[in-house]
Length: 274
Length: 324
Image (cartoon, rainbow over all chains, first blue to last red; front, top):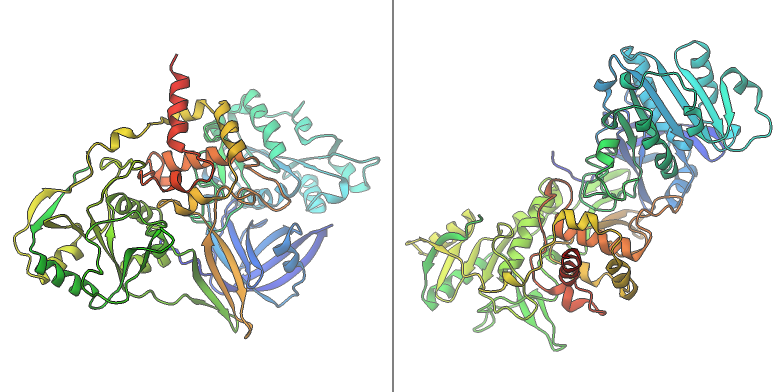
């Protein structure tokens, strides 16, 4: 495939504040961008810069939905835009989650912080596909107020579609709605204790900050999940998305092109990947 | 085994002049030119007067990548709501390229095989190699990888390295091609120190990385002068009329921001990490080029480093320390 590094103009259709410094942005690109869960795209703000981001939902009617944290210069500029403003989009990039592997298997999704965003796209695909067995979601966040998509996840749990368990690092009392799902004060990895699942029939997808990968991935392997069925999606500095600019490389592989989703089996051979 | 046999024709000096005239007829010419500061640079040749063309190759301060992958290259212009493609490249020729640099172009051709901007520029390039005289820092190896280029001019023969080169020779009445090996410098490749991926992977804790990193100034000179280093950043400039030009500009894996993401998490936080990263890239390649050593042995990094860091010597020491 030929690459031009040329974005397509897109309209910023919707901005929904979610939790502090995390808004949900919806874009309608002038040409369709077929983005699968776990893949990512690049948002360009001419004159400011660009950044890579994943979507937090399936592409619907050509619209791409992303949960974006205000974390730097370019996202700051994005937060200053208004509905109807235009941006440039480029993509899709990367491999995405191996959706076919989830058929007939139970799914264990583990999210930390903003890692919930790409896993929500995966969750939507699994729910739409209806080919996955039991779905368990473990989601850890800093405090109850920073849980993304909290009400939606509680609703999914109440309807029995997903076994949702939250953890929060800091909280004195848990707010009312959290009572309806299991919620623990502590690290998300602690939710793995006493978890009822069949390791050899389960596929795991993990997304979160580096610290989450350090503790959870090998832990899952110890619990009996085959390393080839434990997936993590990696974050890196990226300037091209097509395996050229070299910023994202770990273990000799371009995270942008060969990843960003890798199995633990692959990650074990990639020095500095996690 | 990489063959270095190509169609070759003997030539008379007059015929060579005609050949260069034909090459320069509709192309901007670039040649190695010695400057008053003592450096030899690839520069535009303003006129093809007698004696202005080189008769042998020189390892210029900056390699050919400065033409194929310019230090600042426009990617698009944003004007009135549209992202407009960059201007088309113009035809150029480079005369007087050493064989190691032609290998480096082959390598860049693989890296940027799908890159429209690179390919457009590359398609406009006519590359002419020449015999070189290896210096003490040269470590070229014809078995390392194939080479790119169109023609190679030896002492009394000229080789066609591509179909464009063949066509050029035929146009200039060279009609008796013969398969001949290219005159690679002898006895140079043996000076290289090999490094296996296994040894590299098992020596992440070796003290040499930290020792060398203590001297490293993170200036990035090694990577800037390297003919196979290609990492880039993106930069926006706003013009007075409000249009925005986005360019890709050379970046450098020794720079502090290279492995950093938003929120300031750094995946290669120390100079030792960056030094290892560079070694890994040079010796083993990334992505589909994994396993391809891309150090063509031109010696530029050794000469450019202000504190005498030498990847080849690091490889030598890693090997020595691994041997009981």
